Every structure is written in C-alpha cells, then in structure tokens.
Length: 116
Length: 135
Image (tube, rainbow over all chains, first blue to last red; front, top):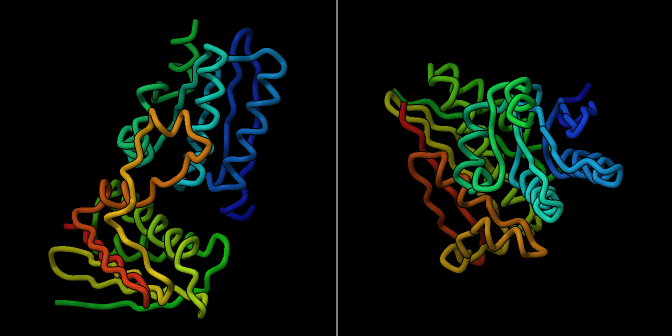
C-alpha cells in the first residue's frame, strides 16, 4: 500500500463506532473518514472514536476535514474522541483547539471505557 | 561543521511526503529525538502545501534547502510564485472555524507552533520560509 493512500475499518459498538485508519490523513484521506462518519451518523450513531495508531502523518487539510466532522457531531450532541495519536499530532490538535471539543485517549480501550 | 542538502521538487500531489521522508532521515542523522523529528516533518509538510496551493509559480517547482549545524537544523522553502502578505493572514480560531464554511488556514500557525523559529519573506517574485529547530 502506498503511504499516501488511507484505508480504514469501522467497528460498531452499542452506542458508538470506532473508525481505525491506516495511512496519510490528507485531503482524500480526511474525506474518506468523513464519508464513513456521515454514513454511521445516518445509521443513528453519534459517538465516535477515531483510532489513528496506524496513521503517523497528517496535514492541516486533513485536520480541517476533522473539524467538519466535529461540527456535525456537536450538532448531534454526540462526541468525538481520538486515540493512538503520536505526540506531535496530539500537540497539534491542542494548538489548534480541537481538544476543547474532543477528547484524546492513549488507547482505544480507554476511549471506549470513557463512553460507558 | 555545516552541511547542506538542496533539492527541487515539482508541485504535485503528495510530493510533500517525499520531502518529509528526507527531513526525517536528516533529523535522525542529527540525532534529534523522535518528537522533534515528527514536528519538523509536519511543519515542512505545511510549508510545502502552502507553496503548492498558494504560490501559483509558473515553474511549478519548490526549492528546499536543509542546513545542518552543530546546534540546529535550518530548512528553507522557496518558491517563485506570486507571494503573499503574512501580516494579512488571520490567526485561525477553532470556535470561528467550526461555524465557518472554510475550515482551513492553519498552516502558518502549525509551522510557528512546532518549530523554534519561522521567518517568512514574501513579495511578488516569490516566498521564502525559513524554519529552524534546535537540537
């Protein structure tokens, strides 16, 4: 797989969905995540965990698409959590203010536990 | 001791990844820690994207120089495009971006936050962004 091609898997829990990505979160990568989130929202999900443990590189265009997802989640009165972030991606999210509206957890298990 | 690596890349999608891989190798050779390597990579990706998206350079190229010294890494990103006025770039705020149709405009903020210094010299003949990271 080329590093720039993002792949993802979605796992549905009772009240939440986990989307795990692998690859570069750029414009097409961000759009792919957003499309999957919006499909899940149409199915009734409003609590999301984005597991980026296999996505080590991101750019501001990809993050701007994550902000669109945050906007939609807030409209639904749901939640968005991140896990598996590199220190630099977590720092960047804090710098941009994303952590005012989302939560960051070290692991997927901790993110799921926080929802229950 | 100073050493330089100079390269020119075409403006093409994802070319910023190739540059970030080279930056990673250089920073690791300088024995910078993992977090600093990642910060340099992301700042450089943003500088490249800025040139790709806004320079409108006729030669469709970006020129990058890495200068390694004993105490820091200096990276210069140059294009021969239309330039921009950095003082007119508004500081993005998440609360405003959430309500706005345009969520973008974070590149300069990310660069300035992740690097030790960022200088922008831009005019109608092009833009030079100079960033440094201390060891």
